[in-house]
Amino acid sequence: SNSRAARLLVEVLCDLPLETKRKFLSFCTGCPRLPVGGLSALRPPMTVVKKESSRAPTEQQLPSVMTCANYLKLPDYPSAAVLRDRLLVALFEADGSFHLS
Image (tube, rainbow, N blue to C red; front, side, top):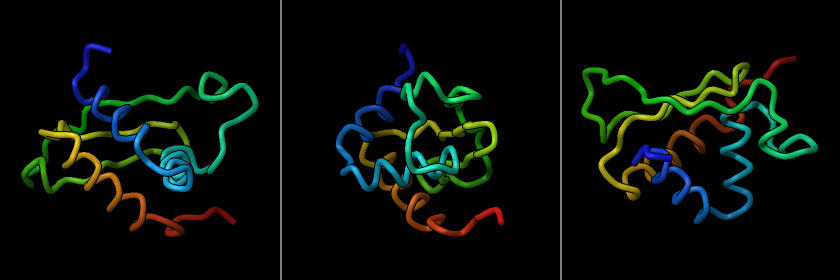
């Protein structure tokens, strides 16, 4: 991809332990595992978009998601370190906070 943010996201995800990768997948899709066929089999497909600025500085914003659409909204962080930090806060703070019954 030509997107710096997308490259940083892939870099950060590659360095995460398996359990944290599962948290990321659950955060984005609502499920901790990929379907048979992998990422390309997700329906709807995973989409990553730039999260438009709010009043908070980019470094303070957290990524957000629409799990039913497999849609990740990612601020344009200045570095992989900031992206990793903000992503981990979002993953671990959101863990178990939303379940359908």
